[in-house]
Image (cartoon, rainbow, N blue to C red; front, side, top):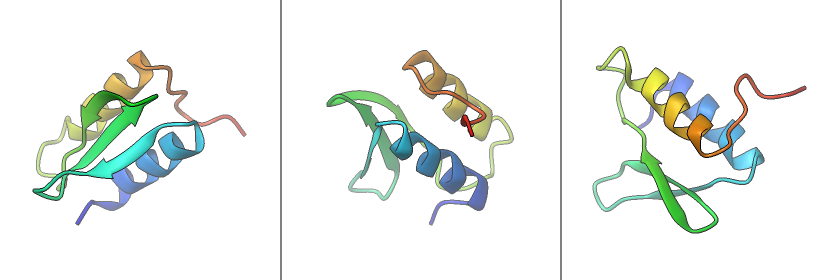
Length: 68
């Protein structure tokens, strides 16, 4: 189960053309044009987890905060 903040970022990534797949262990895996970008944490245990996710997505062309 993914926490609320991570879910929000992953939904925004899907709207921007990223593909979210689930690994065998249940981790959200993010792809852009079939190329692996990053793996998201399932729990908010690491306080840098969400920031690391956004940083990796930005390097692949993700816009955060999402444009209105």
